[in-house]
Length: 313
Ligand code: MEV
Image (cartoon, rainbow, N blue to C red; front, side, top):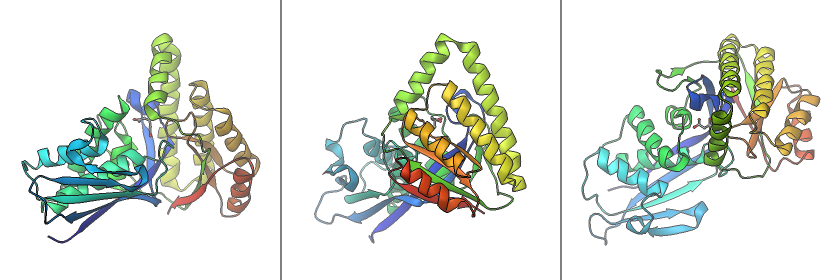
């Protein structure tokens, strides 16, 4: 059997994080500048059923059977074998490498799951269709994140800009013009699970206030969906910045994220907001070609550890 490889991109949420957990609309795009990659090679000397997992970034190199039952890589492999009705797979070595920062809002967990599910199913000669890849990655997300909306596995598996709403068919879309985003990392790692459960506690304590925040975010996602398709960068930026203010009220921003958002806006960004679960991680700024350089410099001088440029055309 020849070696098989599969990759999956990172993602950013343009609008609607957290509210999307409560069935409101959100918009996400894949970020191909960072990738999770899985390579599977046969292990000819091992018996059928033996699987060795090497996750380079996690300094993990162990037999699959020795990983904890809720380990996300183990889950991704076992769910794939289960979906394909494979009891004893031919012995294999699964190597995972990712350039997506962990716990930074860029979808690293979902990307690893998608790359593993794709690689394992392809290796077994039964590549799964995208909807099954996404559905299995969602199962892994549930164990890892508690109550995920499904937006991360969807945008990453489909590798397309999407308007996403839980329980609704996904709406891939094409932008009506060029959009350039800078993604800046605070360097603070923040677990999605904790941010999501923090919002849940505050929502339970004051449902009326939080339902209203979610509704306002939903409306912004709807407006931004129109602006993106119309190629209107100015209005898209405005909806993004308004979304950041609502996320602040939801208690998921932090001083470093706010500082980067303000620095981007002061240096000419069309819009800026935290992206993903918040509490740290990354923020995004929508920039014109003219201001891209000055905004990037400002982000770095205000503490961004890394700035990635991505876009839609
Ligand atoms: C995480 O990328 C986005 C959140 O809305 C969680 C989710 O949708 O599952 C914070």
